[in-house]
Image (cartoon, rainbow, N blue to C red):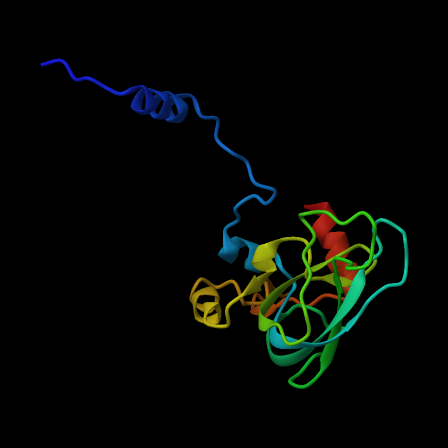
Length: 176
């Protein structure tokens, strides 16, 4: 039996057969692996945003996150606790060179923040959209071991948590 196709059906079939996969601006990431590599993970809400007044292309706005919970902090020189406010970099609102990959949030936006630290020792919430997760992801990250501070063996053969200064963390990151 020979099947007959209409012209539109042939066009649709050819379109899907020869279609090129579309690439997005953001590469998919494994959220557990991303969290394991992050030095600082918190839950909290943006309580304030400082907008820059600049025409420079890559200036950042600052967002201030009021911390509800510190889930992971590998820094011995950055003590954080409930109620503290952390200043973080965010894609700017008021620049002429706005880009579709810019990530910015408004006051009141909250969740689980997987922070990235830049070489200038400032933290960012604008390097990947998956840096903001729903709070319920905390359980998944905990069960996968992504919220644990790295451990090393001390001189007595005992496993201990390894904490860093922010400069030590950068040095270790660049060694890898």
